[in-house]
Every structure is written in C-alpha cells, then in structure tokens.
Length: 66
Image 1: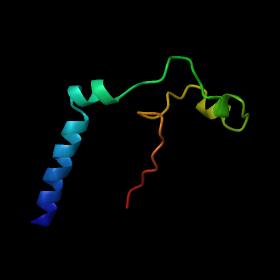
Image 2: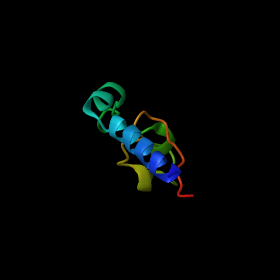
Image 3: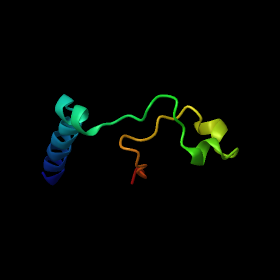
Image 4: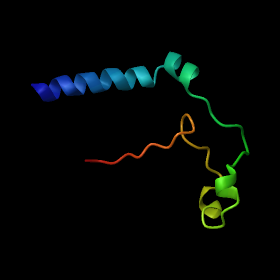
C-alpha cells in the first residue's frame, strides 16, 4: 500500500517537472557553442565533452540506481 502512494507521489512530481509551465520558467539552456574553460582547456576532458550542453541549470547532480 505504501508503494502505491510512493508511486503516485513520484508521478505527480514527475508530471510537474515535465510540464510546460515548469520547463519554460526554470530550464535555461546554455548558449550554443559555449564549452566551459574547465573542459576546453583540459585535454583529458575535451575530446569527450566538447559537444556537451551541460545540465539543466548548470549544476551536475550525481544520480544512481539504489
């Protein structure tokens, strides 16, 4: 029963996050063709991240499957 409640809450939050109102207000994509200097100046990272757009708000969030 608690699993069902958790699923319902998860879906509510997910639907809110993907809604057009939320997306247009909070999601800001970085300018096109702008690679952070931490990546472009480092030969260790640049080949792998040269076309990276970044995270939703510029903050990278660690995520994992428990």
